[in-house]
Image 1 (cartoon, one colour):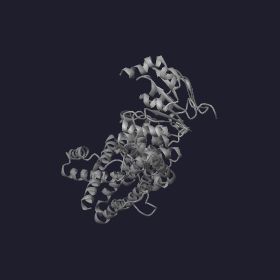
Image 2: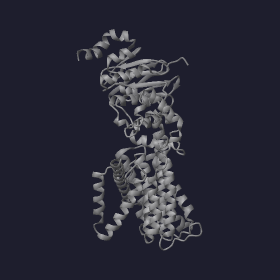
Image 3: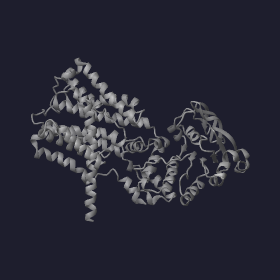
Image 4: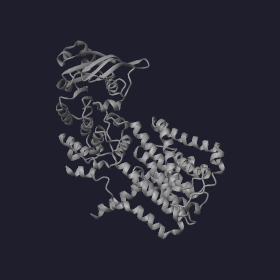
Length: 251
Length: 326
């Protein structure tokens, strides 16, 4: 398969008179490092929710590695390798870090619905979870409740849970949002080191992060794609400057 | 860190404290042989509370209509005997469980598309609906006067339901052990863990590929089956079924019992049922008119000062003791 990892064509979504996605055509290449930027209210998170299958589009088609997923529900898309994280952390706060990761891995391994053996007997799930935690140097906190971790750590767990799904396409919704700069470095390093086999779409406000990470940038304004190009092209684009960069430069 | 792995691998192992309820239950038979009929009712209530804990405590489904399945179990067991002459108790129990599971599955498919307040109201409505259905079909259910003519055969063809309720105490205790073992296995399984995940964050569960509706319906049907078993035991032990088994007050009471004991910990059902029924019994003797006031007071105090129920207080106490000793 050399086609795009994710292909979206003619996507529409509106709430009454408010069009949140208008004729969006979008392509994510295998191994992509793609950023989606745009001013507040541009519809970036809505776009992620449409791709992930949380919202149903009014019109348009979506395919994942050539397979039509327009009518596949959220859980189904996830099982096909299309995984997202959340702008506001969505963790299992009362559970330990290890359990958080195990839930994701158990689901991917297809054993999460079985009820005839104790969870603890599924060594393959627990071992995989520990390996994953070790690779992020989180193994010391494995038995801590997620709610006891620092916010920066929680943002990291947000990504680790998604990686438990072994995604082919990963949608990162502002992974470093609200994290103090001392900790955001760790998160960025993690994102930098993600496998090239994963195609990544990242929403981010921080231009420093965008230009460090992205090899391609799409600019979304009022539910429409304004332009798409390489970081160099976007950086010198006057329209982008006026609707987006202009704000942050003057602000 | 192999410590963390061991923790999860050993989570389902038995703890010494888990022997306490069973020692008490067996001990009660020898110490308080005159209270076995009352003891049987407590055991039945524990089964009912466990069934509720599975969906409320673990899966986070708040229901005000769980008596629906208790009632279906009770009426199924009762009508099998009264109308069909099917008096064998154990098969009656299984058929009742099946009937409750089937209805639970049907209702669950629709109800569990909703969450929060709409779900609470819908569970309430289903129980009221069944209550009125039973009330209207007097010819089959006996309506307001109750279902009479239940004659349960001796257990295993040998043990009659004696005047002191000894047979049914052992019968109910055996059923409780089985239900408890099943419930415990379920909550320790990956399925049980995923229910907790759904309770904690349904949005995230969807985002890691969980078929949430499917899981909830399964849990709901299993819970309904267990409630049906409790209802059937109730009908068989009393040889009488009235509309009360489907009443709103029964749904509300079992919720109070579980909250009182502690939700999401399985043993909360034991503590809640035992304390509630003894307090109710004692207060009713003390003051036949105002006993509900006492129950209300206990509940208000629990909710205000012991959010995790009486079992939570016990656990805290044991932990504090352990710490001060070390």
